[in-house]
Image (cartoon, rainbow, N blue to C red; front, top):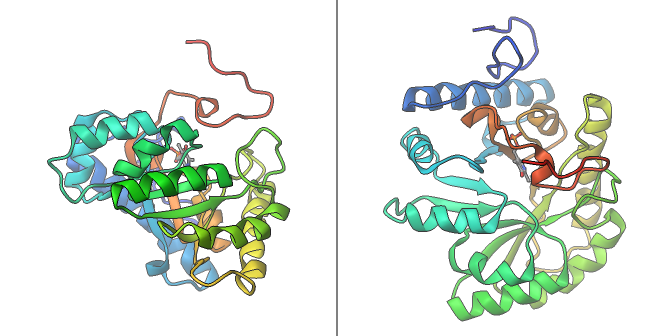
Length: 272
Ligand SMILES: *Cc1c(COP(=O)(O)O)cnc(C)c1O
């Protein structure tokens, strides 16, 4: 283990910089503890209370057996990018009564029905059409859903999410949807090795939130900032993240390229 003795990330990586594969409850405990140490360190650098940051473990591509190990290590709310994968896992693990699911990927309206049925949280709201469809389906199910509004802070036209300048008007329309409990914003930073550019995305989301908080309609909460993943969650916390969505640093390196989950400028869908 390459323990870091400086201020850099305590998150474990192997000699190739890859996150270690977790396949026992002990492995998960170790990885979760390392992420938690990273959270504490980032909070300390900027004078934040670590209690104000929650980890959303992201279990996409992870099979049922390993998800159950992570559950045994304490994970109770899991993030999934694709609705059908999440729905399948929810069904398969219905025996774990207190395991809840957060959908963090783009939603097509024809899958809103599934989300309304099983999800506890939806982090990628970015259109009124999706809001209307979810509202109708949630009313039918007699359920409510915590939602975050996804904002495109990277300026990449290929990324999902509202443009920052569209968000104020969007928020004004949301009180009409009583089954949607709006909690804040979510963003994906630029996928870049340039930490300054990544940080700028997080700053943009926080500043937008601070500005819109004054004028947000009654009942629209903007306390949550979901930003940061395995590679950049400490920067996100330094800039105000309250939720970090962490997959690989908990479950281990994932072979599926990120382009499979969100469009990346200049990157084609992988040929399998
Ligand atoms: C996969 C994913 C993450 C987590 O990425 P890791 O690199 O595994 O930490 C975060 N957010 C979204 C929207 C994702 O699809």
